[in-house]
Length: 208
Image (cartoon, rainbow, N blue to C red; front, side, top):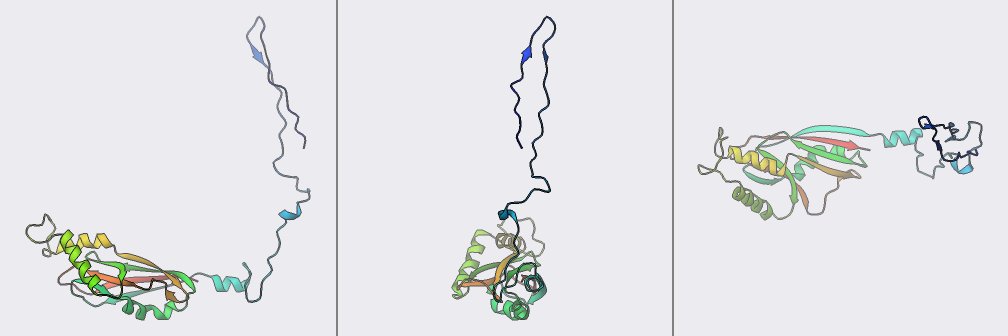
């Protein structure tokens, strides 16, 4: 549509006050009329399925790509103070559900405030021992420590601090029915109490 441009607004001064007169500009249409023919490039084309590939939106694609969920609480028996590799235990508990996912995420949540979860070395146990040594050096305990929260002993408050340092949750990718971790990566449960009880980990699997 041709839009007619108006000349700049002019002000005319007379003996009285200054007045300005304008004429309304015509509105330009931002979209073509409903009857206008759309360009060929704008016409949506139906996807063509390749052999063995489900077309998005088809019943086959909907069933194969529908998100799935699974959840289980795993109980880890009481451990002595220190860092413990628990990958084999976790895999035994979830392998039946895990095998049903081609792509997704595994979320592990520890339901405690005096232990923690982390991912680290799965081969040399010296790494676990050295990590425990490091934690004990940077978080002091005993009578000389400045903590007020000592209701359950000198290791009480230090355990809470260490738990917050490593955290209580992990997220691991799932690929073709397996936890997609690196070659040397393993799941650790870090126990920060001297006399701990069993620990519960809620594992949630989500994907397709």
